[in-house]
Image (tube, rainbow, N blue to C red; front, side, top):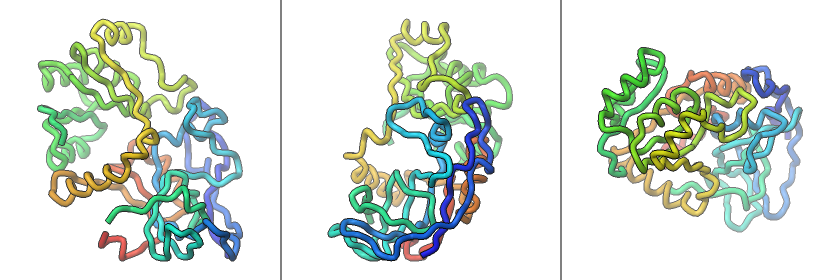
Length: 297
């Protein structure tokens, strides 16, 4: 069987900006038969995420993710539907997901890496920071944020002082750099930083997590601000109850979902480049093939 896949065509360099041409689409043969314990799956959706930028380097700088290899298929989060199964836990028609999904139209996977897909927390004031007026409006009009700051317009420090006059207690950090330094400087005693990502630093040759500037680090220590890395793979035991809780919130209208969708495996590189430059609103997803019954889940 002939399938399409995406391979790493070139590396952008540790200090370079990734482009669509760093990826290449090619055709390969998929075995006609699968072995015991395996499943053949048709890919429905693939995810592109900021952490993948580190995997484009020869050394990721992290101990929990490995680099992609040149001319080899790349992988990440994916969802698909099983077309053939020789694994006792899965049958044809099951929807499955994995964090190690090859960027291919169809794949043969070890069933043990798959999970079946199953059929607010007390903050008094929530402020978001983003890069366009459109995103700011979305945060406040649809997603329940009390306020939003456009970091490309005006002083982030002044706006943050106005919107959070009593200081910041919890900072979910996905960006790093100057913005994070500004937020940390206005955090309260015994507050907490959840270090999820550092997208502003991924095109630079710096260690991960990037060290804070000495003045900001001094503030963090003086105010006893904790800075804890959040690695989703450390919470695999909570995936199923987490999905159930998120689904319940969604059904109740308490959780809103925003996605930027692009179609076609050949557009994986373009989707990745757009995501790294803020072109998406919400989760960036690439639709590889469609399955109408998935909409009923």
